[in-house]
Amino acid sequence: MRDAVKMEVSEMDFYYGNHKALHGVNMKIRENFVTALIGPSGCGKSTFLRSLNRMNDLIPGARFEGRVQLDGEDVYASAMDVIQLRRRVGMIFQRSNPFPMSIYENVAYGVRVNALTRDRVKLDEIIERTLRAAALWDEVKDRLAKSAMGLSGGQQQRLCIARALAVEPEVLLMDEPASALDPISTAKIEELIYDLKQNYTIVIVTHNMQQAARVSDESGFFLNGRLVEFSETRKLFTAPKNRETEDYITGRFG
Amino acid sequence: MSEREHTSKQFEQQLRTLKDKLLLMGHHAEKMISDSIGALVERRPSLAEEVIKSDDALDQLELEIDNLCYQILALEQPVARDLRFIATALKIVRDIERIGDIAVNIAERAAELIQEPELKRLIDLPIMAESAQRILKESLDAFVNSDAELAEKVIRDDRFIDDCYEHIFRELLTYMMEDTKYISRALKVIFIAKHLERVGDHSSNIAEMVIFLVRGQDIRHGTRLDRG
Image (cartoon, rainbow over all chains, first blue to last red):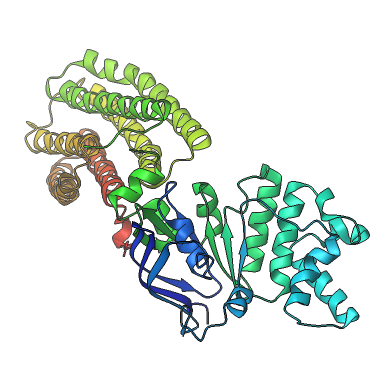
């Protein structure tokens, strides 16, 4: 079902020490949708993204209130296995961060850590399938044993996506995945996002509003820690309801 | 439009230039319609001639506005209200240009009519012309001031102009039935009435686009693409 809710956030407050970074955010993230989060720096969109798979847990003084559900399960429940959560909800960062090892080992790493398989043939299969899914296979199939550090920036980012896919996640969180890439690599990543949403649910933070408009089905606009507007991307970029959204996306800042 | 200014001054300037050109063009079309009717009512062939000549300026403005819109679309990639503004500009520029063509048609018929004796004293036609000019002006005012209520009024008032046309048509039909030598002149008056009726339709189109611009709501052809 295309309109099923994959993750649901209710009344989320987030504090860094005394600073309240998010105020009562509610959002439904739909399965097989690309959900884009936009807003100026410091608006809370990355904090929001990171709290979806509890990446903020380790920040000293950080405090979370509210509820995040993944398929109806409470993500912040004490019974939740965080390692398992992060396998199901993977993350792609702004700067590609391949490990200083071979292309093959980069993708195999998560599979090994999660003990998904020990069978070399099966592992080979996973590597090929995920590299194909990340639209990188044709470019690297002849040099899988070479260091990942020799890849271009765009290739490294797609390798990181392959690495995230290898552990068979359900949701992919992307924090500015194309901001450090040239237009061609950016276009490849965007096309990849379009392909990936057939099988995954994607949440993407981006400063590039045209990118949000191009790749996403639904968009949320954050301002000063509040989710100001959340709607179909098509509507948000043609006729937003909120004046603050309108001013921001049309470039009428401060 | 008590609107915040764009952070990019260049973009802001381009939007302002576009609006100014549209206003200039709208004003020009209004004057053409009023002069074309003036030529008929006051029986002044020179005025009709002026209207026909002045159409070039209107066409020139249409080209400039189109170009500016394409330039803004390509360079600024406008969204939301700005996007609706450009879409509105591209559409109403056609309507205004057509109104100019209509004024030329009216002026041509007027030039022919005033060479012949008056068929009858024109009473209803000036009333219709006045209404058409008024809603044209109001549709442009609605655009300038982003006034959706005024735009709604334009759409309502357009029906009165349609009624005027029906009325004039029927009246002139009786003249034509009475005496065949009236046919040529009566037909020309009917054409002019039909042209004025079209001015009402174009004004109504402009008004619909103003509602789209202000509310982000497409009301054409009875559709309501809701925003919720």
